[in-house]
Image (tube, rainbow, N blue to C red; front, top):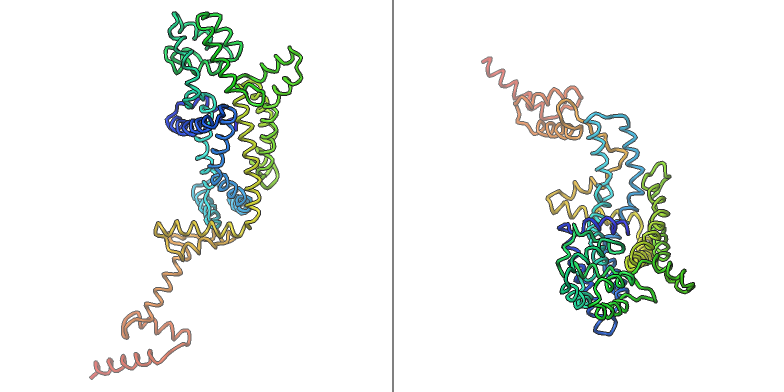
Amino acid sequence: MEVYGLLASGYGDWPIIKQIAWLLGQVMNGIFNVLSKIGIENIGVCIIIFTIIIYTLMIPLTIKQQKFSKMSAVMQPEIKKIQKKYEGKKDQASMMKQQEEINLVYEKYGTSMTGGCLPMLIQMPILFALYPVIRDIPTYVKGVKDVYMPVTEAIMNTNGFQKIMETIGEASPVLMNPKAYDYSQADTIVNVLYKFQDSTWNTLMEKMPSITDLAQQTMDKVTHLNSFLGINIGEQPLTQLTAAFHNGSVVGIILAVLIPVLAGLTQFISVKLQPQPAGDDKDNPMASSMKTMTYTMPLISVFMGFTLPAGLGLYWAASAAVRCIQQLAINKYLSTKSLDDMIKENQEKAQKKREKHGAPAKEINKMATTSTRNVGTVTKGKSGISEAEREEKIQKAQQKAQNSKPGSLASKANLVSRYNSGQQTNQPKAEDESSSKGKKGKKK
């Protein structure tokens, strides 16, 4: 999921993402306030609880997506059969018929082509919005922002503060380009300070000696907020690892590599627990993609876990751990539901949906039980009507002819038909007699 975070870094100000981020920020702020009241002021704990809540709320979407994946494994052979049937046919009529037959397969199983994409499309804005909340916690959590405000005010009261803060902010580890951020605003200064590491605080105090005491007090409070299992989640693990090697601290080395390794390991387990697409890699591109992702994503997690603040690595590890637990529960839940039950459930939902839009239940049932072996046998002649429609019209015409009035042209045509088939009845005889009498009357 860290890929979403990297993508989100450029989309944090997009309208939808921004609104969702604000909403998620309120959740994070609420968690911090509740923990503060019971004496726990720790950003690491907040991140873990926040991650559990958000991913728990997304469970229904995850289940729906994985149900579709399981159903897709059954539908794929039938869809491939249709695709093979039209292989090499690129004319518009054939392509339309192929799509029509594929749609019938989806209708038969009570799902649609967007069944697997829709849950992901709903989840993506949420996952994108999670990243700026974790990255810029003071923007969303008032309690954390309040810790930085006294030193922020002192900085802004210092002559030439903007130029000094821009110089510090555009360098590592902050990397906030002055062209993209307004350093005359308090919120910007707070976000810059939140990304400070110990060495950056020292640089600030060197450039602004007048705020040294206040800066030191803020630094101590921030260290308390960011301390999680002895790890400063505000710093990069790589920086902590370098310092631990320099000091010869074995414990420091273990703590520095702990979060990146956990992020990669939990990511690997999470991907392995997910349902694997059926079929060989050659036949199923999705299977090949999943196999590649199984090994590349954990490696990316480890690399990014070392080079970004440990708080983000903690979020990735926590989210992957939560997904592992959820996946075990979902796998157990799906194992209790047979494929037939899921198909029936999907058909019932689709039936209710279509009935709501006016489609008759009889027609829906016929569509749901259509065998793909017969899909595509409906052909249209020059008249533009299908065989079924033509047969129906013939039957109606025959029924109308049978009920025709005696003496009418339809009745006489009926008489000839029955005579030819040797099925004459009393009705034609009576009709013939009445006809004869009419002729005699004319002779007289």
